Image 1 (spheres, rainbow, N blue to C red):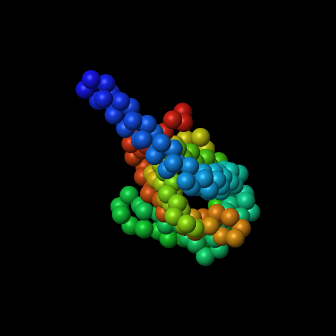
Image 2 (cartoon, one colour):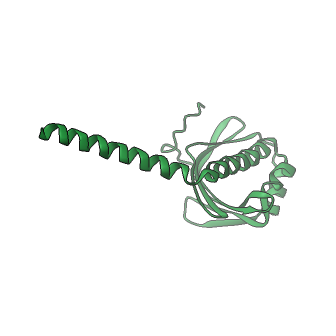
Image 3 (cartoon, rainbow, N blue to C red):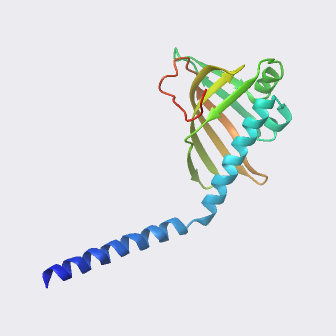
Length: 164
């Protein structure tokens, strides 16, 4: 009789855990929509980046924002969004940045996205690192306020699923 009671309590416990997981995942249905919109904005940014279309990129950025690059030696380079776009417009090389395994954290109107990347220049791996997107939800939707990224030339630890 004790074995039956034990199994019954285990099943009840399992059902309770499953029920709580269901409640927790369904209590904030807008988060899934926000995550999709955030990814869409980042994809639009990189589509514009690959095409060197500064108009498309500009549509994803807050006007007051900046890019901050953390160099291999620990120094930092800060560039305004406008200066970044002006520099990109003068690049003649083909650029492709691949990001994978994004981690998204949302709290209200603020979001943070952590995304390892590899940048290809003219089809060759050029550098890699991690992008950290700080995003803000405006009346127009999610916008990139700032991108802080590491710039590394030794890319062994960044083995993305994208084939070279």
